[in-house]
Image 1: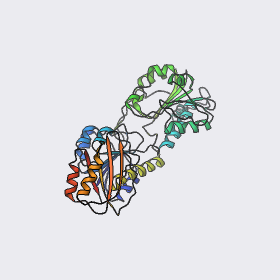
Image 2: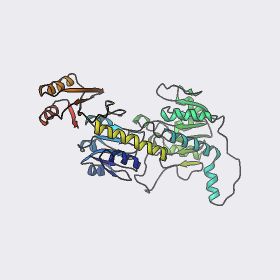
Image 3: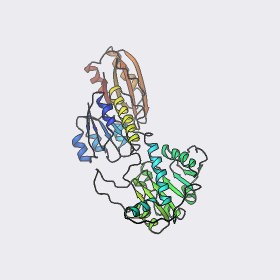
Image 4: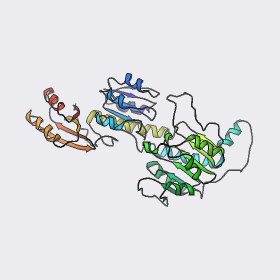
Amino acid sequence: MKALLLENIHPLAVEVLTDRGFEVELLPGSLSEAELLEKLPGVSLLGIRSNTNVTERVLEESPDLLAIGCFCIGTNQVDLTAAADRGIAVFNAPFSNTRSVVELVIGEIIMLARRLAEKTEKMHAGVWDKSAKGSHEVRGRTLGIVGYGNIGSQLSVIAEALGFKVIFFDIDDKLALGNARRCSTIEELLGEADVVTLHVDGRPGNAGIFGAEQFAAMKPRALFLNLSRGIAVDTAALRAHIESGHIAGAAVDVFPIEPKRQGDPFESDLRGLKNVILTPHVGGSTEEAQQDIGRFVASKLRSYAAFGGSSLSVNFPELNLPTDTTRHRLAHVHENAPGVLARLNGLLGEHGVNIEKQSLATRGEIGYVVTDVAEPVAPVVLAELAKLPETIRLRQIS
């Protein structure tokens, strides 16, 4: 089997896959739709980060593709429904870079509060500007976290240890950690927070959630950070509120449009502003995080391809299967309709195939059953199973 890994995925991912016998191609940048269509024939596993979009067309025209690994938290760059409809499982790394993002948020809040970016810029220019003007401690300030998921909740705990009062808003009913307090509306949070940090996912409903109205509702001279999704923020509105002085500083790691490859030019409304920290989508880019992401996602891809395990898939029925190489397996992805399992087992029984173990899970419109048998199933039986009207994909795993 072949695997294609894009966007500088950690070499440990290559090691995990090659140890299992995969032929791996590693590319440094992302690929466009046309480039993916050209590269994917014969590829079973695709690894991407946040800058490669896997569209329905790509999925439709890539029949060899078994699974996609998003070596990051977000999966909105993949058409998840179209992938599931074609029996393609998608995996991500929901926890691996949480600590790295949180540490960057904390560091940037302190940098903004102390205006350190301006200080170091002047020092490099040969200007000695020793002044406390506009420089503040973070202790005792109110941190407002918009989005209280894995990152937001861990940030809450660490920020409180630094002396922040923490408030948060989330559309879901999340348990407050430590002394954090849940706000009933985002407006309530914006009116109280000295620092607002955004940690939402990439669902379409989050596009443009922070614009001129939200920035105007923030406390005068508050700080703003976005290390979540570029589409969530109107950067022109943010620039206007920084230039007016209403917002004292900002740190932004993600942008609506990002360069595809290393060294490509970067354009943004936020360039050239004082006390604004711009970073190239590196919230989770530490050696520790990327190594763990590489190991975690590659292991999920390997498990699915080699054993049929779909644990923690984001779009697929989840089966946590033992890696038992002494058995032969049939992995059958099908429409979630009554009677499919009975028809599948009936066909196996008609041909004298003895079932040793069987696992079934469903998710929405998709069903997934893995059947362990002692001997390889004959091609004629596989052909009959593939002809079942509900069959989406059938694999024999030896």
